[in-house]
Image 1 (cartoon, rainbow, N blue to C red):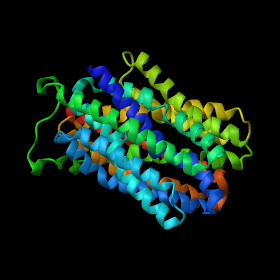
Image 2 (cartoon, rainbow, N blue to C red; image 1 turned 180 degrees about the horizontal axis):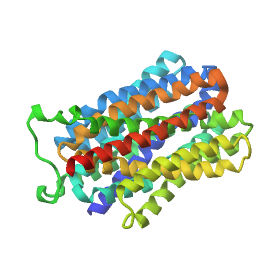
Image 3 (spheres, rainbow, N blue to C red; image 1 turned 60 degrees about the horizontal axis):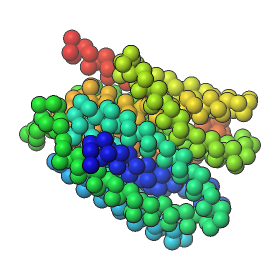
Image 4 (cartoon, rainbow, N blue to C red; image 1 turned 90 degrees about the vertical axis):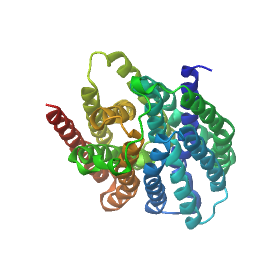
Length: 397
């Protein structure tokens, strides 16, 4: 095995984890609404509970990654995710639905992008950006896999079979890929003098970064951006249905957000030598803002849906790379797993409530009001991110 092949193992493992553990919720939400008669607020409340549990486990997972247990966390979280996704196919009641999604949230906090990127930064050091880019180029197609496959299987055999299918893919294919790829990278981690794994620092100094405003400005900026994206994605099929789009068109739109994420990441690869990480991150915020404007515009013309797919997909796709990279630049690489895990808490909790908040706003004024409120989030987030960047630059000066 080579370093590149090990990173590819992680990339394909992440693709299956995202497709089966995360995107399965928005892909099947319409099925659950139809089969069980649960309200939008009741359904999205389960996602809220799931992401809250994911946020609470994130710092603990980050500390274990700092200690060298990355493969155990990533593969173990994926395996448990597959097991509980399979158990989802047996649910009949709302409490059972919530219980399973709470556990799935814990699994997400151990096996999705944040812990994976912390592991790559720990083992690859300054070379982590290329590794993260490769992972996201492939795993960015997870939504493209999840939406059409789950829709096709659900049409012919029901959503329970679709959940079982993804559970098997995760356990039989995804988990071994993550385990063997992670173990290889652990054994061939970049040496300390090349900015690889960081040394253990005294316990009393591990949480010092929480005392300054830079961390909180950065965390709040990312929180608002991802709150917007989570709310939009999890309500997309329902939103387009309200605006009289055919179900097939809505599913196609959701499916193409993944390829647009990949397209955005490819564009970043070609432009990264000429544009700073700060500028790229600002463009990510700007693309999401413009994407929201385009989604609002779908009430005037269906053509705006294409602009939304391109802008939202590419903006959030590149941000998944830039978030750990810019965090490392601003907060430093030392003890990075803990920093990334702590940063995950506010943005995951914010994302957890985003779908529920959108449901409550919808009850007041429909999806037109939802979008008008949501577009404010990335605008304020951009201001907070720039404040964190300028504060860091001032300290260096």
